Image (cartoon, rainbow, N blue to C red; front, top):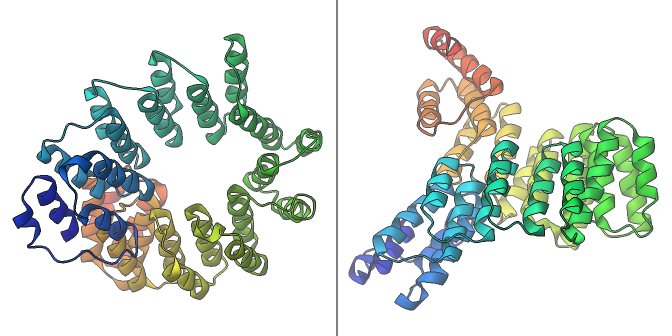
Length: 411
């Protein structure tokens, strides 16, 4: 955090203040990586690249609080950001689902480009609010194939296959020229639609009709199996894919690792981990998180901890996998340490984090810690789900605070 303030002084032209801070930390995690970016000396002419680099790193790591600090430093510096820099900042807020700040920033942008609009559409799509995404799409002054693809992707991510197909048909009616991404999305949509209807005969028939199968159709059919709990079929198709196609994509790795987690296929999961190390997929954040989740659900927290300690691309989901795993194994203090580290890195928390921490507080009888976490949840305006509520009530009960449990249950 000291590096953030050091860079703030430099950006504001007060190098004497910056000298009061120590040398930059070693980059071991998301917060440290961003800190190093902020700490390095920045001449006046490099404001553009410095702020854009920091915002992109914050967006990538989901570091909302650090992103807000960098935003504040940019305002204090008097720097007038370009549309590109503001788009990078916009991604910080949308990636962290802070749409209050995202909307305020978007409304204040005097010059918006296609990326500005698509950032908002993608953000709402990922947060499962397609009504909002559609409202931004409808207001776009110019809609190109990229913006249409964003809508297709949003409906696909939210499991609305029919709506995705309707958008595709509408694209054709309006004369929008399809690109490779359009066909990739609609192919996934068709396969997933049949899979969702439990009509795997049709889904496989569409899949088999594809003459040259690359990672896209393989990913679609495997993901469809996993999402509909046809896990054994997913593993069978994965093995067939390795024989026929040989190539394995990031999304296929993640899907199969989820199958391994549910089926407790630790042996196959370990083989995938070894394969990922050879193919450089181990450095991918999504694959790393899926592997951590697999080890945790297979009751192999020792392997999960080894992977966690060696990984340099940890994000909130990675920490959540460890928090959930250790809370299930009743290692309360380890959960609290992980949550403290998660917060110190500025990665924020969500419902999964809260559920694990409340369970940990119940295990260690840590009512004081639980109340502090509850305060953070209220301050962040995070809407809690049933799992969080149950974990909180259980914590109050095991900490012999039945009055608080009753009050909480009435909210």
